[in-house]
Image 1 (cartoon, one colour):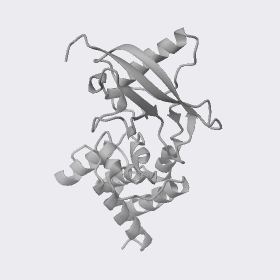
Image 2: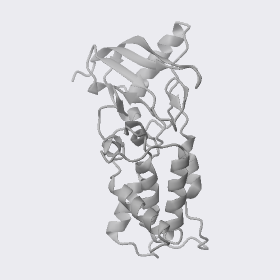
Image 3: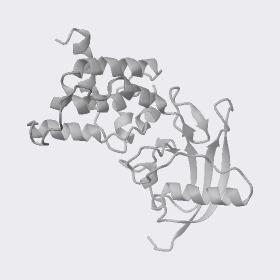
Image 4: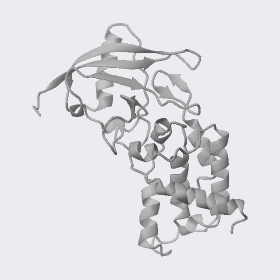
Length: 254
């Protein structure tokens, strides 16, 4: 691809003033977009253009722009985080799009993620689920040496894989039932695989699943859309860990 290649694009972007506004798709055209720009940098160019024209810029979430924070919650042409597997939208580059292409950009769609404005949604439901039990509260005294507690390599790797979840909510946006089970399962199975997480393992599962249900997330569809769009490629196997722990806790820890 040419180092100097530029793209002219047509963007269909969801505009919504607030939660009470019905919202609509607005069409904008941006020209001269470098193929080396990230998707969010392309939106920056659009917003500079809108500001210069005296129009309201498009509101969207972003923070680190390094694929770590999980803030960049955009659906690009119907796919959370866009067409590149294992990639956050802030790390999605414009070289993956064609000159003259039309791109539809929308916020996450879920009852538990109400739209705040334009492409920004309220994901505080995830925070409340974590507050319900996504932590270790047992007092362990001073910090032990990192190698003091032996952890089997298989368990350590599974815990680290689950801990990679950045809580972006793409799994919810992709699921036809707006289920948060992959997110919750990642947090539960991460701690369930480590010695420090064992004392509260059953209670944690019950509390976090109950909080998830209370927030209005749907049930798992078992179609693996969540895994397909997860930018950290969290495995649906974590859901099996969560279901097992929840069932055992409901049976009295058997």
